[in-house]
Image (cartoon, rainbow, N blue to C red; front, side, top):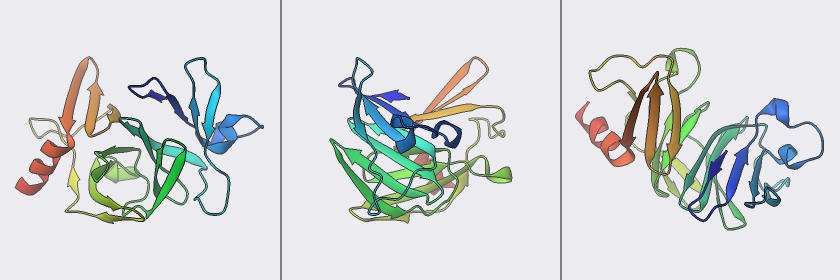
Length: 177
């Protein structure tokens, strides 16, 4: 669950929650401050299905998701969803974006710390640079971390230490490696 600066509450659901008939069956929902459903992800052929909302991010008032199994990057502005197409990396559990560029983070097995940069246009999302590994400032591997994204910022919490890196800086790191 994430909230926007205007107070909208977004919830992305995992597959075990999607049974029944409530908003969870849509995979992605927006709620009012009173926790009333305000918008539900459309269940129609024009949009990719959400079986498990792997990654959810908010950039200002726009929600972004990349969901299992189609792994399409989808944005929702106001009440309008846009399918940007299949993501260049499948299985990311987090995504950073400023609305034009971004990065998918993590994957399965040994790719848990992989960062895949991307670029979006109206109906396409493409890889935009080399993949890198996300490491601590001292170059050490990141283990047992909690990660989440807000717009272009990646937050990594390990124990009681909280790290933050901006997409722009992540891009600078990418060019240096």
